[in-house]
Every structure is written in structure tokens, then in C-alpha cells.
Amino acid sequence: MKGPKPNEILTAAEWERKYPGYAEAVFNSLPPIDSEVVPESLKRLIPFAEEWGIPDDFLRHRCCEMASQDKGAAFKVALKGTHRDFEDWVYTEPDAPQDQETKEKERYAQRRFGRMYVAELESFGGRGIRGFADWYKEYDPESYEEWLKS
Image (cartoon, rainbow, N blue to C red; front, side, top):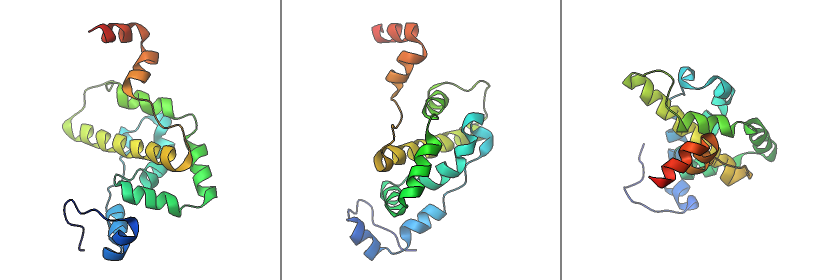
């Protein structure tokens, strides 16, 4: 399938007219998330991360625009109360050493989940996730103060 040229900038309408079906083909080619690398508390969100955690900004926004209000509301409700678990997963080291393949699968899953939270924030008025410094301040206040001094 013919795709865009490097550094080609188009409006959404131009993109769809010039490359019909390309965005959907990219979306459909994304590998699934390996549930073994996702924390237990977030596993129920894997289907949402696979649907909404789209790396491409244009396609993510397009999918969000096409979603019904009911679907967007259900998505936002499903994410309620999960932000801290995601932040802890992303900002802390794994409990046990990981081989390279597992690290790559986990990073991929984290990126897809992160994009899912971006979709929630940008398209459905969700809270999004905190940056590392804000999370760390709450996670370990003493170490945070030391970190600021260094």
C-alpha cells in the first residue's frame, strides 16, 4: 500500500483523500499486547489499550472522533482509578531481572497504554497521567527532596 512521503504534512481531509485506507492498514498491523508483561491490576485494560493506544497521533484522533459518545464515556469510566497503577508500572523498575525480549514487550505495552491515556486526556476529558517528578514527589517524598538537591 502506498504511504506518505517522509515529512509530508497534510490536513486530515487531504490525508484521507490522498491515502485512502492507509491509516486503517497501519492500525490493523499493530502487534497485540503481551498480557504477561502487564501488571495484574491493568490486564483488564488491554482491550482498551489495543483499541485506543494508537502510536500515530492522526489515527488516534481519527478513531476518537469516530467513536460514539457512549463508547467514549464507557472508555473513560473503565480507566477511572487506574492512572496511579500505570504510573507505578512505568516509573519503577521491575521486581525481577528481565531478558531483552521481555523488556521490549513491556516497553511496547507501556507505550500503547500511555497512548491510551493520551486519548483519554485529549479526546474524552480524562485526567491523563502525571510526569515523573510529580509522581516521584508522592511516591517517595524523602528521596524526592534529595533528588532535587542533586
